Length: 303
Image (cartoon, rainbow, N blue to C red; front, top):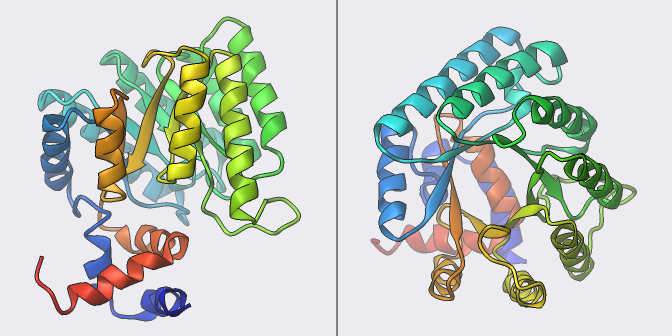
């Protein structure tokens, strides 16, 4: 309860203070920081997906700026010899302002990734965005099926039907690529499961379904119960890394990450960077209030 109290208070404190927490989860505020972090992870045998922080813009001019950042990001990482993938949030491209403009900007980014045989992941946001983001994915998937993927959140009660929709796309002959996560947005109980154990059941059921449909899955979790359950399913279906990879957030559960690598699993780390780090950081804190302990400890102990 103390951790939850600290977690609820920290978002209202000065940003310099919150940065003590944030720097654990964010590679830095500019692309050079993300490049350096990616090189370090590559030396450990870890792949990366890059995310420029920012979402829910208020005017389309901001979306054009984000588009340019992503195009330059892809070019920079290819020049660095880092064959990364790229995650983006449609709300930062004006999804809730003008769908067609958003689609056009993201299509440009996927096309750029396609030119380098790379890949773009459409992040899933809160429930108000889900239908539009699935439609965005459907249209991009028609154009670049090997270069674009989507995220599915296990805690949403609608997820089984969304998985059926993706399975139909996959069975039509164009491979679908899914990142499966629990989901972190605060949603009403009418549309989202709240109990952790029940969410875990839904997660493993969704993973089982995706494996049965031969859909590639990025298994995005830091929950040992889920990584253990995923490994049992991988063994049951005799899968290889052509069928799945584990995915984790930068700075989160490095011990578990190393265990999965040592067990021979492919690992990809989500590397966020950018000046709009505050909102991302406070969501991470609300998701895992235990991290408040590390913030307080950092005030008294170096390193």
